[in-house]
Picture 1 (cartoon, rainbow, N blue to C red):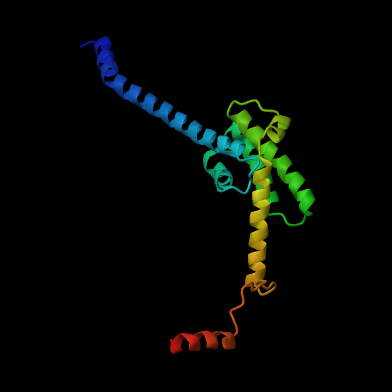
Picture 2 (cartoon, rainbow, N blue to C red):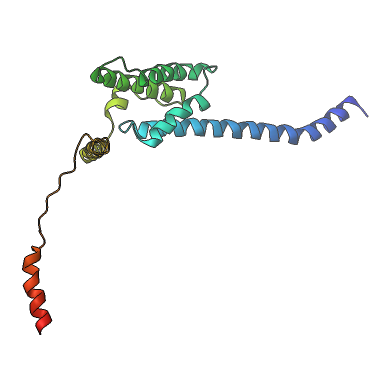
Length: 183
């Protein structure tokens, strides 16, 4: 048996194993990209509703799927850490905090988009959302109901009651009863 025959036998045996390994690696990369895309798409879709469960869940998955060790994702992790730091910051006024939160969310979405091959500018990310005014009113109403309920439960507010139909006085009911008994 010659060296050429040995290489042919090794190539014949190793070829399918190598092909399976390459296919597996490509599938893993595709799945990894799919998970990152799902996070990005969820955050983009819910950027006007940052209190939604889907938005919060997607934010919490960033550390699981994006890596600071990869050059294209380093900026994503950097901006995510700034954003997360701000979310827990209570030192700013509500207005300052809200403005900075939007700016950092836009930065996060832009860097995430770039890492995934999208080219969105900050103005597009910030302003190209549709949020019906009715959704805002519903959220305000739900918050008002929640606050009022807490005030009632804490004893800070009483529930107002108005009686509209008083029962007849007991003496007015007696003659009717007596008249019925004599029949």
